[in-house]
Structures are given as C-alpha cells and as structure tokens.
Length: 500
Image 1 (cartoon, rainbow, N blue to C red):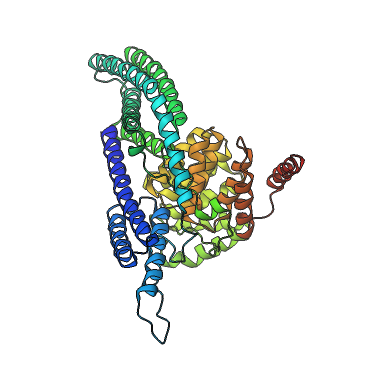
Image 2 (image 1 turned 135 degrees about the horizontal axis):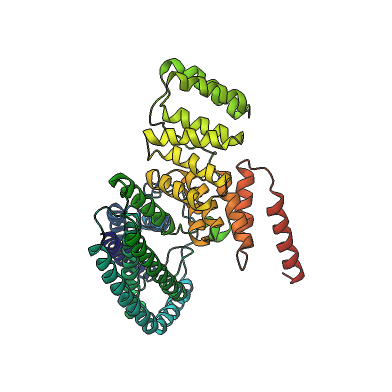
C-alpha cells in the first residue's frame, strides 16, 4: 500500500508540473504580444494566465508557493502597467492594482525584475544539456533497476516461504520490519520508474525547476546504489528473521507492540524522505529581507492544567525561564501530587530534569506521560532531547520523527530532527529539516545558526549562504558563535589569498 500511495503522489506531482507549464506558456505568449505592441491582446492574455494560475493554486495549494507567488506578482505588475497605458487620460492618476498573492505568501511587490529573453535562453540551454545527460544515464539506470526488481522478487518469494513455515506463536516483529523494508524498496523502484520515464521524453518532459533545484542524474545513480545497499541489508535481515523464527518458541509480542514498531518505521521513512525546501528569492539573490518578529512555538497539552493549579504552573515556568531549575522541579512535583497523570506537567518536569542532568528521573516521567498519550508530539520531542543528551542518535531519531509525524508544523521538532540527522550522516534530510524549521518560523535563531554551520562544512563550502543565515541568527537574538565566526574567517582568508 505504501508504494501505491507514493506512486499516486508522484503522478499528482507530475500533473501539477504539466499544468504549471501550460500557465507559463500563456505568460510567454502574453509577453510576446506586449513586446509586439499588441497591448489589448497582451492585457487579455495576462488576465487569462492570472485566472489560470489562481485556479492552479486552489487545485495544488502545496505546489511551490514561492514560484506561484512570484508569477502572480509578475502578472499583477504587467496588468497594472498595461491598465495605465490602455486607460484614457484623466486628471488624476488611476490607482495601481494591488499585487495578487496566495495564502501563505507575502503580499508585496515583485521580488525581482522579470526574466529577460536571454535569461530564458540560458535556462533553455541548461535544461537541454540536463536532458542530454539524462538520456546517457537512462540505459544504465534501467538495467540496474531491472536487476533490483529481480532481486526484490526473489526476496519476496523467500519471505513468503518463511511466513508459510512460521510457527503460530513466533515473534512477528522481525518479519514486520522486513515487510516494511520491502514496501519501502517497492516505493523507491516506482519513483525510479517515474524518473526514467520522464528521461525518455527528453526536454519536453522536463518541468521548469524550482529555485535552487534542478534534475540531477547523479542523484538518481546514487539512489540506485543506496537501493543496492538496502537490498543487501534486507537479505541479511531476512536470513536473521528465518533463523530467529526457527529457534524461538516463546510467546510473541502483542498486536499493539507490532503496530508500534511499524509506526516507528513509517515515521523514520517520512523524515528521511521529506521533500526538499527550495531556496528563497532572498537567499538566491543574497538580499537583506525584512525579518518578522521572533515567535515561539505554541503547545497545547494533552490534558489541561486544572484551574486551581494554574498559578503554580505559571510560577514554575517563571522559575524555568530564569534557570532556577531546582525551584521549578519542586513546584512541578507538587503539581503532580494533585494531578499525577497530567501529560503536560510530566513532560515539563522531564525537560527540567534533563537540564539538571537527572536523566533517570526524566526518563521515568516521560514513560508515565507516554503511557497516557503515546503520540503526544511535545512529549516525544522531550524524549528525543533526552536521547540526544545521551548521544543515542538512533532512538532520538525514532522519537523526533514520530513527533514530526504528529505535529509537522512544529519548528523546534524540525530543528532537533536536523541535528540528529546530521549526527547520523544524513546531510540531505538534515538540511531539509533545518530549512523547514526556518520556513515554519522565520525568526527562530537556532535553525539559521545550524544552516550556517551546515553550509560552511559542506564541500565545497557555500560561504555566502552561511554568512546570510548567520546574520539572521544574530538578528534573531542568538549569541555570537565562535566556531562559525572562525570558519567564516578562514573562508574569508582563502578568498583573499585567491585574489577574489
């Protein structure tokens, strides 16, 4: 089922790309009419394109909001300029139309000048070159994909044989893991099929790239290698599962434990395959944007604090904010004597105990909170921070990916997830998590700081982006970071030595 849903999502994404290209063609036709001096026809075509783009956004609200906003602003500017030219002379200057926007975007002036014909010619040539590279990769990728499919079919057959011979009381957890990995492998194969099918059509099937993104045959080749590694790992796990089934005679786990293990695997897969967050226009142009006021993540407890304890909770949080952790802990213990199963109080107390390095006590209270609300995102986030403190990156990843699945709009969870993924060597998903945290909460200093360090330590370093994010971190109130400033100084010296 997982691979089928992924295939359907990929198909819907392709449909959105095709519709956007049709809107773009209408805009180019309007540009041509405008340049030829056919102002009335150009005005009508721009209006038609804007209506089509607004309808497109309603149908695909999550599709590249930045690109849609840019095009709506561009169309508003063109329509406004033509309205002035086509309007009869009047004593007063007619009001300019307000730039259009879409939900979630900025209602502001166009973020930059309209692309020139030379810009589009360069983009067209670049896309043609990318399509040619895809054609060269197509045959090899197809052969490797066919081999992977054959290997997967063999593994599925062996798994069926193992399931047929499994004793009724055997532990199904290992088999559940194998089945989940097979579903993930099928999903990857289907996504690869879509990529290869698009490659067969050459430039005509290559959609316009989002800012900061482009088709990358090398990335597909790397994905094939990763599939090969997962295939080998799957074979090892299948062999271990068969051996465990043959040796085990005890009672297996409950259905709830099996479902919990599967939910953990799904949450991890969701975090690892999160779509990349495109670069903003400000990042691409290295402009200085207006920075919104810092915001804090609003959290609602699973169980509200009783009215009679509200004053104690406020005092405890005041102690926490001033780092009087011992006093805050004492108050929360008193609160829990009145309301012992309050999830919010248990989680807050665990967070305080992590600060006091009382990790065993923190773990005890987190277990009590999760027994009441196993999917509470705030509790899972605090559990992830406990595991980060213990440098248990795998269990931290498990807790934080579940938190992100339950609360995908939580910027703090995304920032913590990015740190854990970096420690696990998953740099691509880590960058996506940090960038999503910035997108969700632009005034949040920590992910800006983490992105600055990320871009300074990648090869080759992206110094301009690192400097841009570090400035935003400082503007948001982050203290100066000596390590980031040292790396920025080293890069500045290298640029100076190179005569830049």
